[in-house]
Length: 248
Ligand SMILES: [Zn+2]
Image 1 (tube, rainbow, N blue to C red):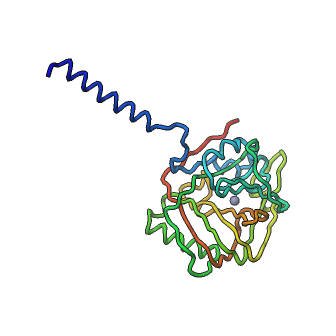
Image 2 (cartoon, rainbow, N blue to C red):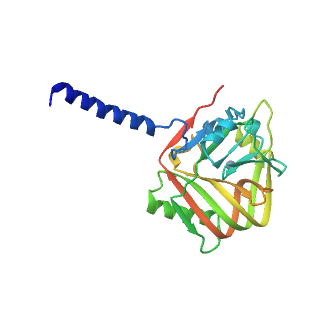
Image 3 (spheres, rainbow, N blue to C red):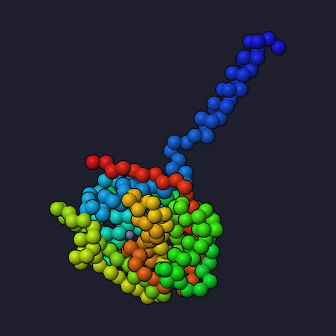
């Protein structure tokens, strides 16, 4: 075999590898199992409620999640790619891509853990149940997206009032009556959200954070307390968190 032939052969093999590796890279695919956080929650806590991420962009990065809006105008909950806004007066609307988020956290939900609920649980019971599952899966230092589907004997949610400048820190907003609580009994619905390790507390919430939407899409909000009688609990583990910094 002459030298030129060998070089040519090596070049051809390298070219084939290059073409195949190029074909397998798809920059348009967002479903890489990452959680996308649109600007740190710390921004909200300090009282910056200006929407900085377009919902058209947020929607590209996940079918499941939670968040809020420009000027803190209600609670966002996303289930199966449907995005909803739960207003301070308790009504529910669909989110349009032209709206903006002052905070949002979304993911393509593909469960690694799923089980049917064997006996009724409240919020703290659900947390213990899931922490046990996480400990025997990957431990408590990774992020899990969480989803509960079923029959809720009682659900208590809240939403927040749209703010105007000058903004006050979130703690002041919540403690001075700019939040409304809602309660329902006998609701079929879905709660979605996250479990975050404590080291993520400046980036997003610590521990569990869930938002709720009823099957009839008429009731929802930030989940405060519940009693769930039956249904399915699922969780989607990820080691990857993408932080999108706010645009000015
Ligand atoms: Zn919330």
